[in-house]
Amino acid sequence: MADHKYAVVGLGVVAGPQPGRTVRVLEAEAARLAIEDAGLERKDIHGAVQMRRSAGGGDRASFADAFPRMLGLPVRFFYSIARGGSQAGLGIGTALSFLDRGIADYIVLSGGVTDWSNVQRARERSGVRGMQHAEREGYWGRAVGDLRAPSHHSWMASRHMAVYGTTSRQLGAIAVQTRAWANLNPEAKMYGRPMTIEDHQNSPFVVEPYHLLDICLLSDGAVSFVITTAEHVRNTKRKPVWILGVGFGEVMDELWWKKENFTSMAVKTAKEQAFGQAGITLKDVDAAQMYDCFTAEVLFQLEGYGWCGKGEGGPYVEEGHIGPGGDTPVNTSGGLLSCYHLGDLTHLAEAVRQLRADGECGERQIKDAKVMLVTGHGGEVVSPGMCSIHSTLVMGKD
Image (cartoon, rainbow, N blue to C red; front, side, top):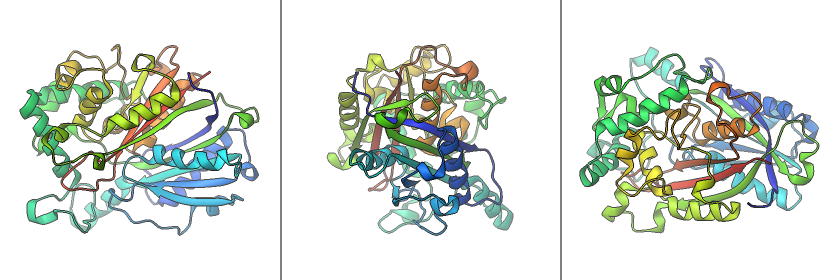
């Protein structure tokens, strides 16, 4: 196992509808909670990172009312980093260099969204349903119907079905097992709302082959965390969760238009880098917190990381491996499909809670968990296409 050099020592989560609150307010509140959770004071925080979804999420960067200013943090540096749903991966990857060079002892990272509230306002004004999505230069857009995320994600799921015989019920098995985890998590939006495979199959198609219940939630909220070095862990009050490995992959690494790339994600280099730094193999991973904006993403990652062979993901999930009681626990919070959607920040928060193992996870606690996988992806650079950047984080405990 890798040396323990860097750790998450504080976590702040703001979940659920937040009407009337801005993204910066949510980021500031989550950061306040994370600093408090770590047992630190504002004066201890030397740097801050804002994690956004830009370059793939349809939003635009802005430094107005930056959360460190709102909290009065005496930081030496602040910047935003953005790339689809790899917010935690990229945020950690860049922030570690500041720790490594001694520029900061403690860095707070925070990211938030107000998607749910935005949609409610849009519906009130015009009756429009769904996430508001800014069209960007170079996208295929209206001419071929690429208007929303489901339209440029669904065709890769269709390709997997055509090549490997994957079925809608197998995709539904992912949604059902993820919902089962959510029903063990009082913080999840879908807590107390169980799902059957019949519920999945009877939900309306949005873009074939995706039913409504193949698609992630829209959410409000924010997640923040404090990171530091092994030298400074002793000054904090919570059990450290160690950052053992960080890795990245990119669809531009290969010719993306080759048909074999239509049913996979850029896992290979990200896994090799992160697992190599951590000194682990797949057998060491106790649970995976996988980016799951759609059900097929989970399928592709199960195959890409090696839990099953290429094309075998459908039968694998249908056998119940990833839900409660399975041997490959995936998205134990309920994930983006059934808990809340804050990109890979949703998954990092769950990994931290699982590894601290101090009662935070209740019924869904993975017994004796020592290593967690956290993945992110998004930020498409070609369209239509979904599998652009991919990030791998390996998290562990003492």
